[in-house]
Image (tube, rainbow, N blue to C red; front, side, top):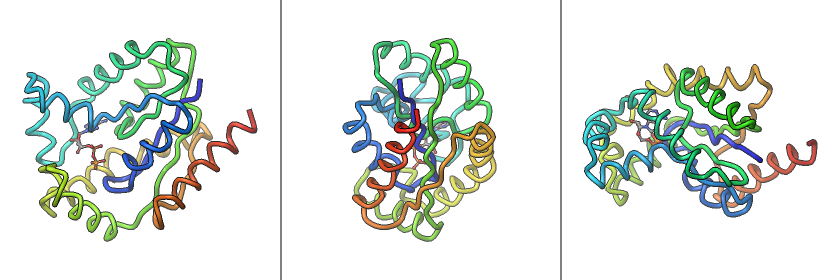
Length: 194
Ligand code: ADP
């Protein structure tokens, strides 16, 4: 198995790169943002609860997203590997993920962190908000709130994986193809060392 975390702030290009990476490396894509938006679209009780939180730029409670991920791991028991996108987003989620994977006799192999400066991130998110229909991308105030949540709650996750020697920073500016080549090179390097 090969399990990858694609890490980085809102707007850093995780979703875009994930689409290409899952095809190249035959991974199952687990995006908690997409899974939550799916619940909202289906008007489930969980979706109704999550929508208000997401529209404010806050994080959905850990137990909710951990439950969603646990379900998806069960449903894809035969997968060759997973690409986690937008998860784990808190230290608590990272520790829960370690435990879930341990139960399955596997682990996170690599965490690739896309690095993009904040002004570029705001520009990308406002641009995406024009067409994505995502209400959390249209207000600069909500976008700034998400960065604040990222630096308070999500950045400590990087330290967790640095301590485990699994973390690698990848420059996330430039063309989509160039960034994809950098991510692929990091994965191929890792695999060739195994
Ligand atoms: P972005 O990375 O652009 O913020 P996502 O689609 O990953 O977009 O997430 C959108 C929103 O969904 C987040 O702001 C948050 O409210 C919620 N969310 C997604 N993943 C998680 C998670 N792992 N833990 C808590 N909330 C989450």
